[in-house]
Length: 186
Image (tube, rainbow, N blue to C red; front, side):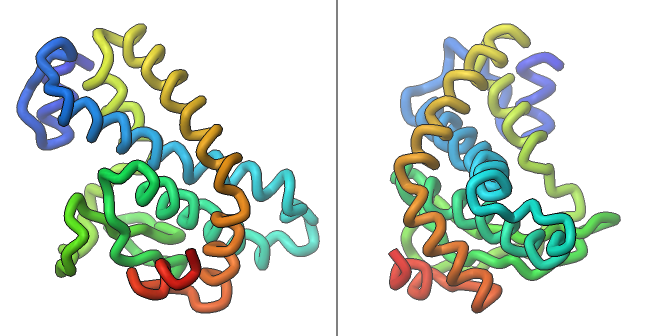
C-alpha cells in the first residue's frame, strides 16, 4: 500500500515521510505507541497476572480487556499528545463485530462529546500498520518504525505497570471510567 493510499484510507492528506512536520510526526508516533501498548499490556497480564487458568478463562478475559484499555489510557496520557475522556470495557457492537472495550481520547483536554463509534472503526493492528506506513518510506521503513515504536511502548508499559494494574482493577469493578474517575485512580 502506498503512502498516498494509506493517507487516503486514514483520512489524512497524502504526505511523504520526509514531508511530515515535527508536530505531525510526534502525533503519529504517539498514536502508534499508545495503540500498541494495549496489546502489549494484555499479553503481559496473561503472563504475569496468571489470567491464563483454563477454568477461569471467561472471567479473566474481561480482566485482560481491562489491562488492554488501561494501557491505552495511561500511555495516551503519558505521551502528552492525547487526553483520555472515557474508558470502557463494556462489550459494544460496532458494525458486524463486537469490540471488548474502548478509550475515547482527543488532542484537547476540554470536555467534548464523542461521535458514535464508526462501523468502519479500524482494529489496533490496522491503526498501527497504517500509521507506520505513513511514518516510514515503504514497507521496510514502516517495519523499522514499528519495531522502534513497539520497543518504546514496551518500555512505557513496563515502567508504568503498577498504574496500569490500578486502572485495570478500577475498570473491572466499575466497567467504565470518565476522565475524573480515571484521574482519581492515577
